[in-house]
Length: 384
Ligand SMILES: Cc1ncc(COP(=O)(O)O)c(C=O)c1O
Image (cartoon, rainbow, N blue to C red; front, side):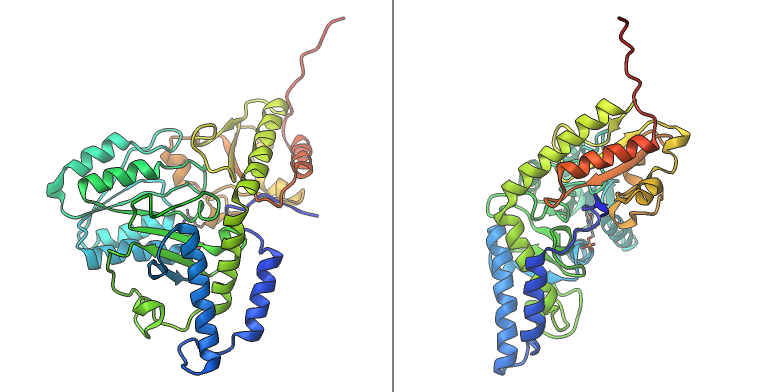
């Protein structure tokens, strides 16, 4: 049996989700825009799913729009706020996911000013610099786009603090919450925010389906023109099976959040302890013991010929992990996050990411396999 420790890239579908989707495939064949009973049944299922997502975020149902995933939701927040809200400046960070960074490049070509905040060696943004930039009101309408958790190193941003700053200085606030959705409680009635995003496949739902929360007072025009689906915000017949699976997965993730969190936190601490105990020169990337995403542990191994092909050797040994960002997992491309945090390029980074399906026995097996691949710590010889 393989050991899957790449849950930040994607998670396996949970059986309850497969069951809900299979039922939907059998029963929901009508077009939700049709006014007859077959269409109305499907429309009702979509609205039920929307209600479930809204409930867990403490949002209104009119603030949730289903999309094809996190990438589309983030594109929409950035590009539509430039087009429809008169945003002229965006403050972000160099370690955002590529779907944000590339959207920023795209709006920059339209004359929008992009300001990147400094990040420290743990991937924490400079909040004082954010405030200084926001004080400059001459810069025009501003959007702050800062991810909630970094997908490679797991550092969390302080949503409450950013929200307060944006509120004080009248800026729009978008957070890429793809990695934290279903793993941390988010209450939009308490945290003032304009846009957040979710992708079902990060919480044991299907790939190719996600959502965006758009604050009810923020009026955007559609990014995909067509029919009147998603309250005129996204043309095209809805991905009904995906939406059904997303809602089931999100409901289960939110209902069991504390139980899963405590299980995963235990695994993560045990793994860290075992790594430190058994191997020389282990370091961890990100804010690993401060404000971190508990599903992610980014481990930095000292340079050595043995650690050079580590990811490949782990794969051969039956362990799936990642050497770069979620979306380029498997490919050992240079990471803009690790360079952005000034990480030593000679060290080898492996991102292990967990789900509630992982066990302590699996962690023990990973440690054993690692012992076969890299140098183990030399134990002190005790003289008798
Ligand atoms: C932080 C972050 N944002 C956005 C995305 C893109 O989400 P999706 O795969 O649903 O398009 C990912 C996926 O890896 C991610 O980790």
